[in-house]
Image (spheres, helix red, strand yellow):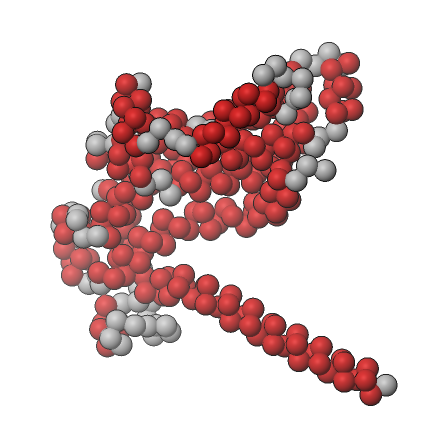
Length: 296
């Protein structure tokens, strides 16, 4: 009995220790985000009084967010990024599925050669200059298509989706074919509805990549009206266009606006949409990655 009591007490101590450790790790991961939000709503006077640091602001102001959405650049860049994210993610999922489905069939002619070619692209790529020349030759420079068409299909995500399709019951496919379903109808009416976990997972990965698109915006876009959100934020956060941008705002508003709060508000605006969408797709992520990566 004493050994059992001793073991129970030891288990409780271990659970408390593990819980405290995990809580500390979780807090250390969340605190930077919480701090960014706090600074974005803290008045200049309070930041100055506390040496630029504030955790529990005594007063809250949304002047930084007012300045962000009154600027001529942020709403335009946000609209561009939303369009690219929605259209690009849809195109990514469509073309990835159209290629993954036939590759999931062992009867496909030259299947092994195609897979070998695709695997080769995971190790080697054409490089920056050849890629730019191809994009330029196809007329995509200074178009929104340059932000998603060159990366239309990710080989890594393609292989995961292919493996997921291979795990679907073949009996169901045969039954659909006996009912007169062609391959396209079979894909869109049977395969994709059964593939919600992998579609949601790949959609989240593609969508986050488009939302955070920065490199393609710098390389392929020269028109200021087509710059994505991340490029505009980088220019503003680095101070390259901060002064000219603030001059377009209400002078009285700018005079009351702390620079750090403005920068933190930009960070919040750029990350909030993904943070709002992620919880709804999180339940599909582990299931989709597990089923897509391991063939049962």
